[in-house]
Length: 266
Ligand SMILES: [Mn+2]
Image (tube, rainbow, N blue to C red; front, side):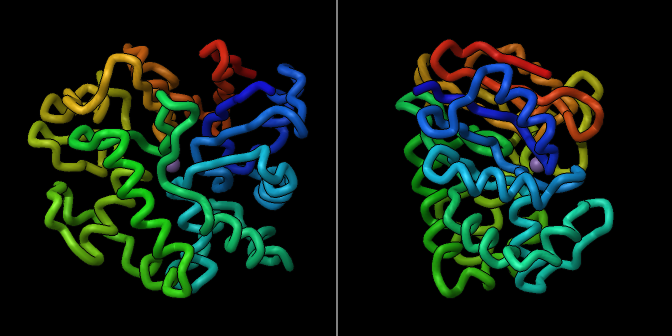
């Protein structure tokens, strides 16, 4: 009955399977959580989706930017890029089935009562409750018949700052960008999308999102996220746990055991 959270899989099923065998993962009694980006850039996209789908309720994930990209390809909002290595999924008879399955996944979820799981992180103006409510706003649309509208309007970098009065496409785009694309913020908390380096290599005007004070968090709350391979798992904080260690780029894949909060890599 163990719970595990895996970093970005990105279509690298062999890396995931190697990690799961190290912990004797039991697909009937244990639960695997993922930080999103299940597919994208890695060689085994279709097999990865088939395996994760087969786990049923013992697999839970939030959505990452690559997962949303697959939905956008499915409804014609985006064209597949060769580098994403999604051809096998797109040609599969199960393409629609996997997209319908992904549309049921949220942008943020709790693991237990004190861990918030998201793909890119927690925007510093938001509490856990706020994040879950905003994630639910997006899920309401993604799970409706109107889901293609949001997938068509979600691309773009603006607005880059949050306020509670945002409505419509702008509100949805900011929420999706913060949960799936965020890395650095300007000092006034505007999202900055161009810099993807390690924090020490970034312009001095930029702060990693987790370095900006979040007055809403209690000392026991932790945020587990992926997306930012250049961090290589380092945030210098026990409260913010980065799990993307760049397996798809030749790095390793990281599995966090929730019960012990210990990390394992391959
Ligand atoms: Mn990502």
